Image (cartoon, rainbow, N blue to C red; front, side):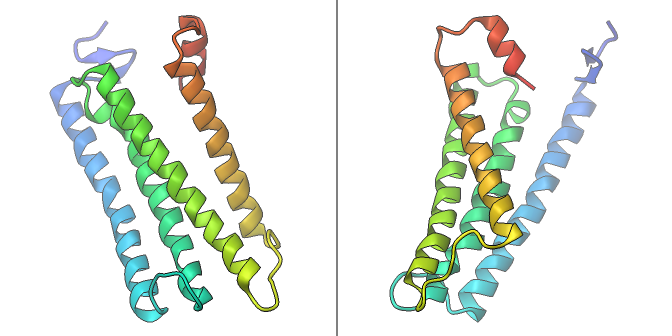
Length: 168
């Protein structure tokens, strides 16, 4: 085996440093998107809130979905490689926490749309566009993946072979 290579992957200090730079660089578009959403919906579209203004309720949808499915989900994917010298248990907990945050925020983002549609006068139909069907499918698959990962890696009854088969 080549020095600095593990299963054909560069594990040298230089390779790790580049990975950290790229991971940090990957945060920039997500943070920019969140800031732009906060500015657009917070300043120009009436803000965020509940109550009589249904647009303010709907404004939570893009914010929560971006935070959940882009920012926290993306960070959950990166966390194992970003902290290689941290205990496996601690990394699992960080990974799980980020995925739980992602699931909660995505659920809030979806529920605000359904609530907005139900409170509209007259009520708007749900799941009437391609965007809504792709979104509900993506969040459903994410939830299924979350449950499978939770059952696979947090229950010691499963064999190591099953766990390795589930890993990417």
